[in-house]
Length: 253
Length: 287
Image (cartoon, rainbow over all chains, first blue to last red; front, side):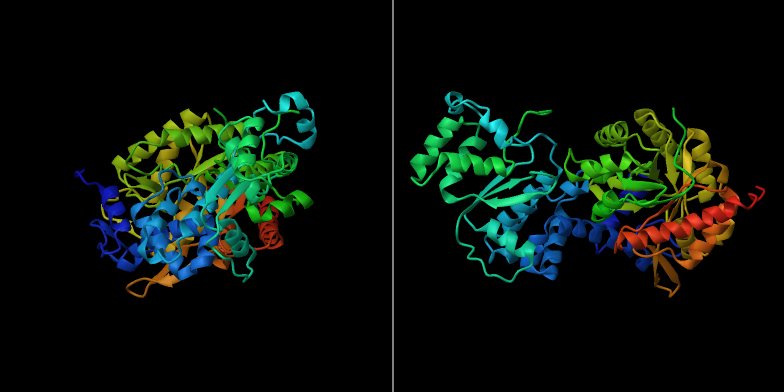
């Protein structure tokens, strides 16, 4: 067998839209048939583009299907999936969008893509018990300040200079409402039951959740939040996060 | 090592996320459900929650699309480990994969690509299948492909290629009747003769699906494997002919694109079950 075997020739030609049908590949009439070979080329490209479409529906709605397809094709050309687990394809699609000149007019688009990828991660994340209000109430008041609450494995946090949480919910809801994009939002993704849920964190709670996400005790996080925003209300913030399923409970509890 | 398949000789359908709700709220009469292994390789969440509930009530066919058994490169050990974990967790009644490749140096191409049939590729495929069966601790079913091109270097006819793999590795065969029709039309073969050549004693499962039709550069009919519609009448006729040779088999209706309402998919499965009932009352044709 030659150094470049049948598979390398086939793969090379499938991935290069300008390439001729690879040598040794024919049809029943004997000759190479570009339309027959194109079926494979189209399957590969369309399959990868539709995997991205499935993973980034809000991005697609914002830019429209034609723009999305050309952006996705450009991404596919340089980033093939590294594993057959296709639901996690597009890990760095957001970084690609940030460098994709035709999308430069929509500066929030990379963060919207980041948000959608985090949603995918959340949807497939490990199962674990959620800390509920009753379990929270069992922590004695004296111990509360020293308690570290771990985020649930399906919880994700994205801080963006843009209103990506609001844009996401408008796009996913299919509503035509206009959103002012130039407004910072911190979005919390949780999966209280099987469904992924997005919540725009109230401004006064942002420092609190960010500190908890970084592993701070409740006391330290509360101090940071109060210092950042005098409107912070510890009890209300903690109960709200708990109700969203942000924290991991005791398994089997 | 276990037998190749303990699926019942009934119709089954692919499990689609859009049907989870219909299935768990009604528990329809269905011979089995099939999942693509790769769609259940996340750690948790809704897919596992539903699959857990469904395998409590129905046999499961685990169908892989990403092992790249037909490729020249080594098998992906991480992917084998993921499959082993799934098999351990869900204990499927059968595990099947394709005579095709999907991974090359450049990455995973997300399509089932063809290979030439030579002594060299036969050895390679047999080595891969033995490795899969050893790693997973199950005997697998290998599915015949649908193809649009032919390799000049091929020296072995496809049914012979499959039969030799099965006899050498101990794997069973998954006979995709839609793929037979597609390849037969695309390469001007008689699909009935293909079925008659097929080693039906090695068949452990049958697949049915819909195809699309176009023409090639010479204006010849070119069938495309799309899984996007009901089973075409010519494929159903070929399926009946197949059943007369194989006897009743587990039969999967594949409908992966333009997924219909669950009721429409179930109606397609009922049509298959009726054909299985009919063949139960007929003697199996002599081989």
